[in-house]
Image 1 (spheres, rainbow, N blue to C red):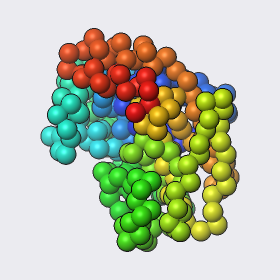
Image 2 (image 1 turned 135 degrees about the vertical axis):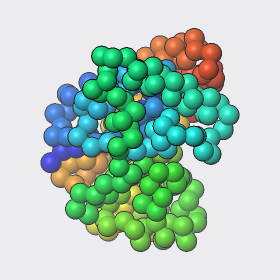
Image 3 (image 1 turned 120 degrees about the vertical axis):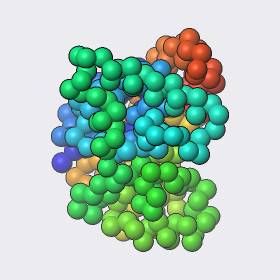
Image 4 (image 1 turned 180 degrees about the horizontal axis):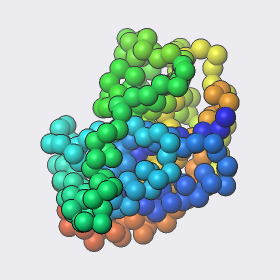
Length: 256
């Protein structure tokens, strides 16, 4: 079994297309998306349609929920982007030709968590699937890590922080550290429990502007893939939309 696991597309169509092309070359059996298909980026409708078409499982992210209901806990720039995104989805869904495929209905029916045997898929964490951040520095908060790991069967795949890596029960955070000259780093998961952050397709925040996703092989080995895409094109699109902060485009160029 070979699964591609993506997360945090954030309306970045150029990044999503590049990642899906790489996934096609890898000949995976299924694609899982861990949420935040929309938010921040300039092409929310196109990204939702692609994810809907290509992914066998899609998990609800906090930005996906924010686009459907009143956004809660977002800063002003993110909230403006969410409200603009909601307007784009509503305009799409009002068109008669789209009445049978309302994107808001698709997002509204997404689960917050899903398990396949002892493997869990969430957006945030096993404790709070929608919106809990688990950052690398949380290894210095053993009580938090212990409480979350209690809810993990064996492996939990998550996104939300946009920072790829593997958490162990030690607790320890293992960064894949894919250098600029590499496209992949493979890691064997521990015999015990682990949480795997798959990184972000559409808005990396680990100082590497390339998209990041994971391929899970035989439910034991993970391959962190870094894929270059024309981020300057996405940046220019964002700059051209008044309701999207220019910073949301500028950060793509530096992976922050």
